[in-house]
Image: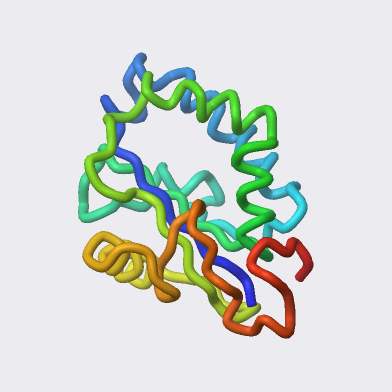
Length: 160
C-alpha cells in the first residue's frame, strides 16, 4: 500500500500576479526536490509536465491550487514536508501567498501500489474528511491511521 495526499490552497491573487512571483519561482525547485525525495512515488502534473497548478482547477476556481501526490508512506511524506529545507522555507512563507483555511485543505488515504488517484477521487476523500473528520477512509497528517495491511508495515514506516 501507498498513501495518496491532496492539498489545496486558495491564493491571495492569480499565479501571474507580482504577489505570487516568489511562490511561482519556488514551485519548480520544490517539486523537483519532492520527486527526488525518499518515498516519493508520483504527482499530478499538467499535460505539458509543468506543476499541476498551471492547469488543474479545483471546482473551477482559478485561485485554488491543487497538489496531488503519492508516497510510500505517511512518514515519507511528513519527512519531506517538514525536513526538506526548500519545502520548509516555502511552508513558512505560505501566509504571504495563500488565504487562511477555514476548513481542512489536506487529506491522506491509503491506495494500492500502482494506483494513481484522480482529482474526483481526491475531492471525495476531502469531502469525507470535512464531513466526518479523520477516519480510515480519509485522514490527516497528525492522526495515525494504520496501514490497511499491518503485516506489511506500520503507519509510520517508510519502507515500500
